[in-house]
Amino acid sequence: MKNIVLLALPEVQLLDIAGPWDVFTSANRFLSDKQDFGYHVYLVSGTSEKVIYSGSGMPLSCSHTIYNIDFPIDTLLVAGTALSVLDEISPDIYHYLQNIAPEVRRMGSVCVGAFVLAKAGLLDGKQVTTHWKFADALQKSYPKLDVNVNPFFIRDKPIYTSGGVSSGMDLALALLEEDFGKPLAVEVARHLVLHLKRSGVQSQFGNALPEYEMMSPFTKNVCDLLKDKLGKAITVEYMAESLNMSVRNFSRVFVKESGMTPGRFLEKMRLDQAMNMLEYTDISIDMIADKCGFGHAVSLRRLFLKHIFLSPAQYRKAFKTTE
Image (cartoon, rainbow, N blue to C red):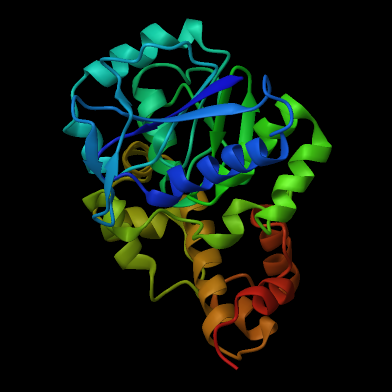
């Protein structure tokens, strides 16, 4: 039997816990004839309180807290929560993770739980992922990490990180396959009506740039400057001059504030606009390429394949919201 700990903090995302929990406990049903095989799954509070409230307001009763765990842990997964919570919780959670890390076989995270492991210093030098919306913030906050937003989960032993919300189930199925083989993992995936290995990449579901509200004031100013001019030729010189800065100083400040070069930011901004137009309009792909500053559809297609592994036509078919 393997002891699995799902570590929860206040405002935890319910599916970050319920998804992996159902994968592991469903496996037990198919292993019921083997008494010494399977999982004991524990919901553990990252605070001193056993009852915590999820982000949706549902109370969750934990069997243990980090202060009274009295059993050996095989696998520990940190569930995601609101980023604002991380500045409010006790530093004890990070000390606990640092101390327990050498004793567990595997440690991982679901969604923005990666921020907790990163703050504990457990992800340095690792390739990791998190929710697509917060990937840039994770990379900027912890530059020693190699953040890859595309995979639904990443294994960089003994650390396992998964992307947004439902990706915790992708990770749990992978851990199950690792423990008890592919046939059982397939059986559980079928039972839960899931793909054992989901096709596509996480970035197909999100924006190329971080949310506007998460940008620094300086980056927001640049974003506001460019948003109505994406169909025109835009140079770094134009951006710098518009903000009364030298090109060298502007480029330096911009990289510091946004975590990317001005050219990279402009490319992602154009990509986001193209994705939006593919979703909400019937404008031809050629016209979208022109309006977004790509010049022609070939350049737009190349960028889509590079970043989200779909052509513009495939993206429109998958995500268009109007008839």
